[in-house]
Image (cartoon, rainbow, N blue to C red; front, side, top):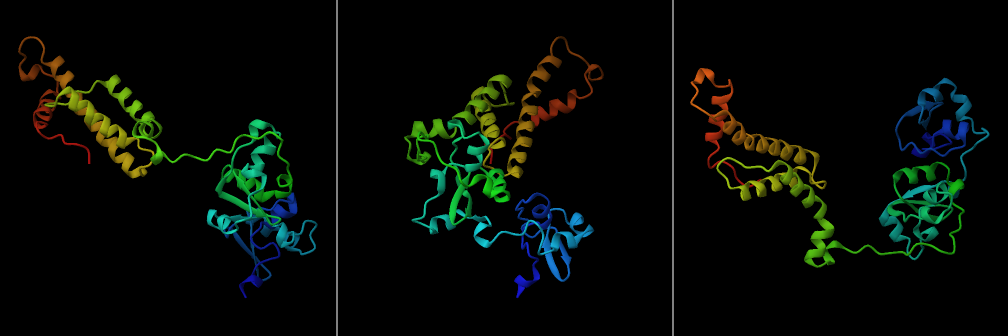
Length: 274
């Protein structure tokens, strides 16, 4: 069926395999067709210049047999292979080797970045390290851990901590940044108390810089925060402009009347962020 449509390198790039002996999975992008076969290439233009050089089945670097082809696994697939365990006690083989196999280079991998190779399972620190292993697995797979390894600590769920610990571990940094911003700006919103002005500013700030929100939501509240700051700036502006003796309208700054009307229109308008 469809498998016959693929070239001898399947979803691996024939150019990378021929030129560098690297297994470069292309995942379906950049397809090139030659002699009724489909080849997935990282550089299709180079393949199309001399396709016979890369599509030849007797090339010097042929695709290895299936058990020597690394394959990505999802976290669920890894769990389904229980009781089989991950190799290297779950430490990332790429980070370890690239770190010259030092103790400090023993970094725990994540199940979401798993690869099966030679019927063994390896997990990696991040996607970049996973991709490096996929390209040259024979370079990283056969390593031995030192006698002394870091303790394998299970992560503690935030929800299991007492309230004070939960706040300290979960939101302390964000709250400190928000309070620091309040201390620097010292906002006073028209017709609101200093306390309520500060609380509203913290609320807008936390929503504007919440890393778990979407970019759209963060941008939305950054605009609201900017408007809040602009309205707070009306008070010092009017105080400085209206000092001293009475000045006729012609002697006032051009934007004085506009900002005065803005200030008066804000009475009873500010609500909690939603």
